Image 1: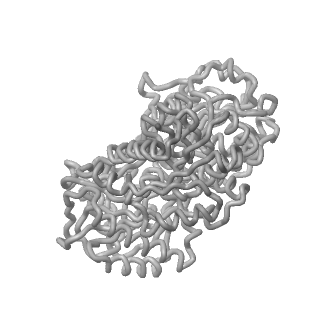
Image 2 (image 1 turned 90 degrees about the vertical axis):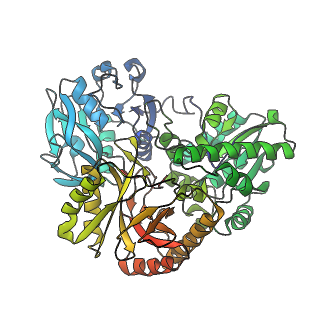
Amino acid sequence: MVFLLSQKSFVTKRTPLCVARVDKIAVLDFGGQYAHLIANRIRRLGVYSEIFDGAVKAERLKDFKGLILSGGPASLTDQKSVRCDESIFKLGIPILGICYGHQLLGYHLGGKVQKGAVREYGPAKIKFSERKKFFEGIRSVEPVWMSHFDQVVKAPKGFKVVGKTSDCPIAAMANYQKNLYGIQFHPEVTHTPCGNTLLKNFVAITSAKKQWNIDRYIEDILKEIKTKAKNKKVFLMISGGVDSTVAFLLLAKALGQNNVYGLFVDTGFMRMNEGREVAAALKKVGVKNLHVYNASKEYFVALKGIYDPEQKRKIIGNLFLNIQEKVSNQLKLNPKDWLLGQGTIYPDTIETGGTKHADKIKTHHNQVDRIKEMDKQGKIIEPLKQLYKDEVRMVGKKLGLNDRMVWRHPFPGPALAVRMLCTKKSDLPENVREVEKDINAIIRNFRLKAKILPIKSVGVQGDERSYKHPAMIYGKFPGWETLSLLSTRLINRFSEVNRVIYGLSPADFKSLNTQNLYLTKPRVLTIQKADKIVMDFISAKKIHRDIWQFPTVLIPLSVNGKKGESIVLRPVCSEEAMTANFYQMDPKKLKELTKKLSKIKGVSGVFYDITNKPPATIEWE
């Protein structure tokens, strides 16, 4: 019997309940990592929004109050890239183009789009020449979030250029008469402080009435669960995190406690003592039907000799399904009577290439091909699939979940398995000496030095997956602001790099050597010790709530010939996981934490990830 596998998701493709008569704004999805986030932001402003494929026919959009064209990974310089139906510009309703959508406005309406001389990934400053209508209420200079390589180089007739950056001369343009607006930056992410003001302005321009809220969402999703489940019960993979716990509470509220069964799988890659603690915590919040299964042996066998991060994630996801099938057979559950439930949230689906034009950043364990096929067959139920982490927390609080569970740091379903990088041999770009020479020339004035790490990590640049090298810089601490600026500058300039880390220990890094390592129990013990030190430390220092998530990463890198591996600290600040800033820890606290970690047997070096998302993902794999 096969149902579902993990800790996250659900929603059908039908028009949601009770929205036929409300004012609506449409988001056209061209595959951008933030397309759903745009719709999320509009709903938070009280207006219902729906997402459509970017190539949707204009006829289907005539009843909407406004349209927003999302970003996307494609390039309009490629003739095969997705375009929109040009008839949408004849609907006579306000249109906002964001990133790729901004470029589409330029392309379809007679402007010109081409590759920029410099890529922009991360923070930038935009100067506005005027601030009215859509741009009302913002400052003349605003920090914004960029993620693009193409740009509009000639505005269409009737458009006025109203914003520019040092690298993007047409970062904002407007046709006030027709209420058409294009911006190269992303207002939907929290890293564009003026973004919410701009989206509020757009909603006001559309005259859409505010008829949507989270209470209405909960009401509708409970009805939808009942409709989806009919007379069936739900077998839910549960991890103890806020996603799967809230999914359980929603399912139990809709279907009754006796009709929802939870399975917690201990993969062997959990945090220290986590299996026992999670089981106790779940029972305390009302999860009564809970089965705990120790699968550590199966996982270590299945992942022996596996190095590739994508292959690792797929094996983990498929093995979850195999174990679920085994347990359900042991419990003698009739597959005709059950659905598989997951706590999937939206970032899981979009990063797995969950929409038509989106690029696959990484395969989430709860989005493997078998799950997608089961979903098509109607065997999966995922109550949170349209939500982001911050919204899940809002729902959890509405359902009475305690703060300890609501604010638990996100933890990946594959657990520490995706926080331990594996490698067979040293991997460096062919032009590594040239790249290191150029980087060192840039940072020399800051009394810093640099090396390219002989390993790779996953990133997201221009809405596309990247698998490139981290650059490591080291020397006397110059301050977080300087490190942040250098990180952005280096990644934007050097295509070989998608992540920058700062060396904490030892003081000098004369040599860096990789080892042939895959997932083993001794490695798990090392990262468990390090992770526990980190989590205990931020709790004791009362900075746990200041940090959205704190991955502790183990990389197969020895420093200066010392035996062992290295630890990378990756604390981030975020709200919805689609964007994130690295957390700027107090230097004194960081020095204390580094000293504790350096004492762990088998730890050769300690680093600090100073990369935002994008261009790096939060996790390293």
